[in-house]
Image 1 (tube, rainbow, N blue to C red):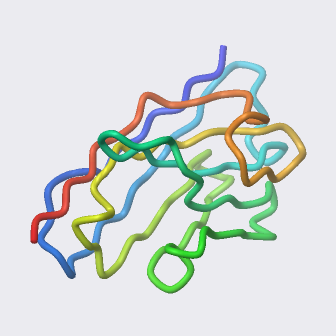
Image 2: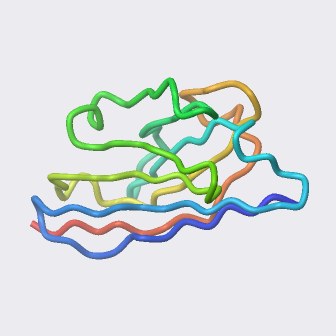
Image 3: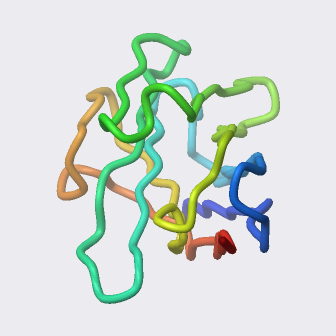
Amino acid sequence: QVQLVESGGGLVQAGGSLRLSCAASGRTFTFHNYAMGWFRRAPGKEREFVATIGGSGVPTYYANFAKARFTISRDNAQNTVYLQMNNLQPEDTAIYYCAADYSTIPRTAEPYDYWGQGTQVTVSA
């Protein structure tokens, strides 16, 4: 069984930063074989793509809103993927989820095989 556990969310003022982490585990889960993605769901909105990263650390893809402010990275030795978020704005308030997909690097949610439970990010004005 694969488990993804997000952490690092919280309450931050507009203009602030947060670094989300997602730790992956599983007896037969080979982390570097999986692309890792971040998605978010804001209140009353559909889940949307934020960023994704290939198993080796490249390539990376970002949603347009994330390109200038967010950075996705991973540490395969620690089975962890990160999302550094800078200059956060109230519209970034959402639950952030990480997800794992075997071998492909999708920018939509449907192909992902495994999902975490999410971590809440709240940005106050």
